[in-house]
Figure 1 (tube, one colour):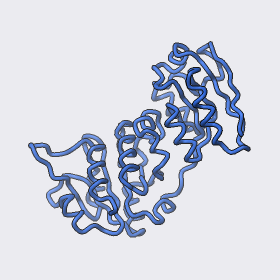
Figure 2 (tube, one colour):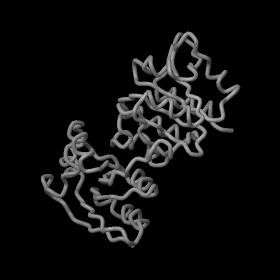
Figure 3 (spheres, helix red, strand yellow):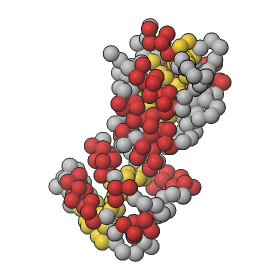
Figure 4 (spheres, rainbow, N blue to C red):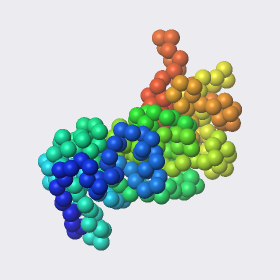
Length: 275
């Protein structure tokens, strides 16, 4: 069983804690994460799902009362894994280190796994989602949670889409970003051709004069379907809509023309789930 090296921490400026400093600074995170290949998992639930997916911790930072839970989680790691440094600090010290109140008292700096090629994720898949340029991390996390709950086989994110492994995305998804296979599809929207070659019908969710309703799509569903969802506000790029095989809209009432992208994703995933 791997051994956790428990190390008490009292100084927020401790050099060992560099991975956790000022996590609310998005610019700092975007500079730091690609260089070190890290992401942050918050809460024992999220960490447990990350470990179950085969991800490995570089270190853990937590309050004392969460230590027993952590030791149980680390017991699931392979015996040949390296010793994991576990930094234990009281709540005020945690907040001084990170710059925010640490929800559920635990953070882990995780090694970021390499992304699989798109072609690998499409093998055997029948329903995939494409998230185009969605910049709100909360919406990305919510879309992943719906994808996991409603049987989407894979999620493809475009180059400008927010990082699914950003702390807020992971937390909102409740760790389901580790359950649903995902990767970046680049270039995009040229990647539509790759989906078509793999036998997928691409359905762009957008408001368009020639759009069919989601009910019509469900009445005669394609064997392999890629649902393409666009950014908050402007929606999908016109070139993406034009290049897709179908344009689909969700019927609305009450004078409302569209839903938040995370809500639209949930509706579309449920309606097109494989029976």
